[in-house]
Image (tube, rainbow, N blue to C red; front, side):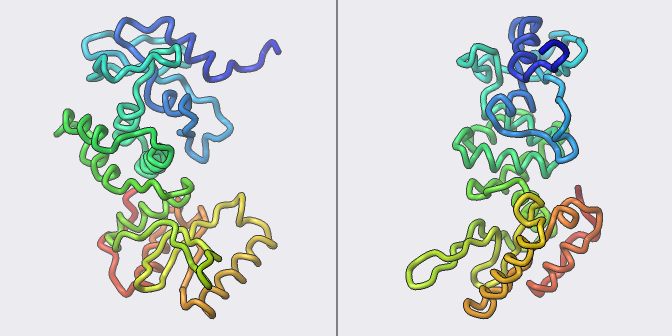
Length: 263
């Protein structure tokens, strides 16, 4: 219909037509074309600009709706199998780990690893080329946290809060079995302590009935299986306070190594 916004593929195709030789669609646009959502929660109703890269020394294109960056881009990091010059998954992830907010970088990395789109060693090799440059140390740290078992962005955000606080690395997706049959699966936890933390997203944990079911499930896990399970929502995971870290510290019997949130 006339007046409707163009879809992402159409906008990316249009951008590719004005790219200079050696340029490619990249960063968040490349991730989205791989069906990995790069949007912040506050951007879910927005159309993101098309992002693209050109090799160092080439003037970035300037056009409404396009964000173009000059960077160290190699021919081997461009894939044209989709009909568009687009950065490979490994190169795309290296860029996103470096330039996105940490929680989004890790969430996307977990999702790409879960879908087996990336080779962590190959991503690390790309980051090694940029040693000493801005945000590369953060990108390396996030890459070391990647876990392909993570099933949602909320779980990735929660795990990052836990790791940044200096707590022991939690296990993802812990099965609870009864008579040889899995009856529950916990988002994150420490099996030796029988302590778990779960992300209660609004979609599946927001209604009174869903919250009642969560409470009954966690009560059963405590009473019959000895697991202390706590659920936390987006307001705590993405909020500005240290309540999350302090609560987990009390459960684990340790002290957070940070005094305020790092992202």
